[in-house]
Image (cartoon, rainbow, N blue to C red):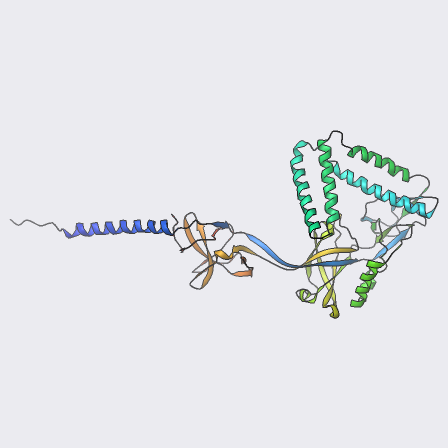
Length: 417
């Protein structure tokens, strides 16, 4: 009888395969153990980088001075900058015995009104001790900003920030000090104000519709559209010199001024190299420092070249009058020359795979490669295009992905142990 022998080869093959799998599995985790770094990541997000230039410019606007025919304290019925209608009463002028007395009464009333407005901002209805923390934070931020302005010898925002600091400190004083003098001082100023508004008064009406302003600066006849129409480089710099040196006296009977429309121009010289980046007829963003960094979109309507100074005198136009925006004649501004928006990527995260620039991202414990198109470069970071469309070979980097910034031995599909 023949006995059939067992095939001893198959168990050996199975054992070999099993041992090979164990070796591969163990080796894989050993490689990850020794090659895995202390991975650092950042979340991808969109940011904007801009190129800008700062300087000093001047406001040009068509305005008419309004006179009452007599000097005296002025009690206004409308807000500074308010739109008014033809024939509308805007103020009472209280006559006094002499022009000098009228000038003094007018000045004192103006200062009293300003002090009252400051104290009125300091009284916060419905506030309690729980608001102190935010007020302290606000005061600390403002204080640091004032210190920075002083350190940089930048006076553009100093008045705004100083007033903001005073208001915040007054608010804190009202909340913490039961014997605060803020309210009592305000009442005393009201009585002082009333003392200037006595005797006969003359109602003042506007001759046409427009925008009414309390305080002329005396340069209304120089800084207007007629001057802009024929502006030359020499004419502009002569006008600036006149503004800086003129000792003007405004007639004591002038109680305000009227602008017919919302249109105004801002004229600012910058270097020709910077001006070359701007195009006439296009809109640009201007940030006004004395107006608490208010940003307005203005149209660059024309320019005048000052070849001897290598400057371009830019003429911007705006038809907006934001609330509480000061139209003081001379202002510091920043012009945004260009801007680019993209996903922020540290330079350390960039990798090249088969000649393709990209980054590695982490999803769970798996590494993936993402292609990027660089649109803006700096020394330590770049911006890459957002909303890239995936191709057959690559996905583009999107927002809210974990970009690996310091990994080594990375590859698409690697699992980090």
